[in-house]
Amino acid sequence: MRVGLLYQRAGTGVEVTAAVEQIVAADRLGFDSVWLEDRRGEEGAFGSLPVALAALARRTRGIRLGAFTVAALDHPARTAEDFAVVDLVSSGRLDFGVSVGSRAEDFRAHGVPFEERGARLREALEIVLAAWAFDEFSYGGRYYRFPAHVASGSGLARRRLGREPRAPQWERGPETPDFLTVTPKPLQEPRPPVWVLAEDEGWVVFAAERGHSVVLPPADPERLAAAAEIYDDALARAGRARSEVELAVIVELPLAAGRVAPDTVERLHRIHGATGANHVVWRVPHPGTDPVELEAALRQFAAEVQPLLQA
Image 1 (spheres, rainbow, N blue to C red):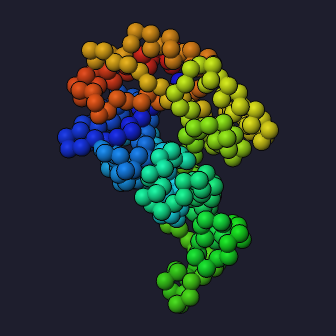
Image 2 (image 1 turned 45 degrees about the horizontal axis):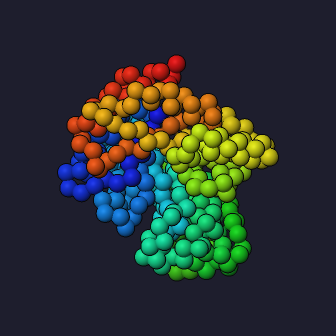
Image 3 (image 1 turned 60 degrees about the vertical axis):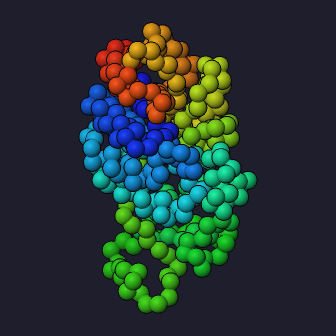
């Protein structure tokens, strides 16, 4: 199993620096991924996740960089641009994660109806993937239109330019063209992997039907096994296989005196046996845990636990 770290908050002041240094240390220790969670509006949140990931890209070498962004709160064309930059500056280490969001106050602050969050996420993700894949495209959805004059409900239209000479948009005159290009494009081909943070069964099925990897929140092994079965069944109905995607589980590991609990390996093997998960994501207790103790636990996990997960 691969092992990732999840940071929900950066903290304030020196806590931000401590989080960065822990992630840099995790990169040296051989952890496979780090994830930041979109918790805008909360004290100590990371703020702009693409900015944070781009900064981490310059300090790390091998660890993959992921974020669970609440895509319904931002314009998807900007989301595509920002995360493409992260993929470029990290030399292709971006894992693009999305979350439907659960804090109604965040949606109120952005003027987005909370009850529309699921439908908006579906449209936003479709636009992000089109922006990464196509030379020029247009999209007319219920909630997003790109360009703005495209008719609502017209759906996705795209065209590849091939070898035809292309005039930049700013040289085409005063009128907005019917197809637009979003740049830059990400480095990874055909695109960065998409991960869906599945808060309920519906998002598990959504991820499977579209060939996206899925991340399950913490739960007992029986509930995780049921979610994994739903994912596998939906993959099969869509004509897909588990080998095409990844299933990750978020775990919380208690610490004591700079060490994880003695039964950690057994516990993670039990999760793997119940779900077939090939990725566990440790929700790091930061801020709130002494940085020295947390870094000691990272070193101990890398030296004593991680090798047994790979055996």
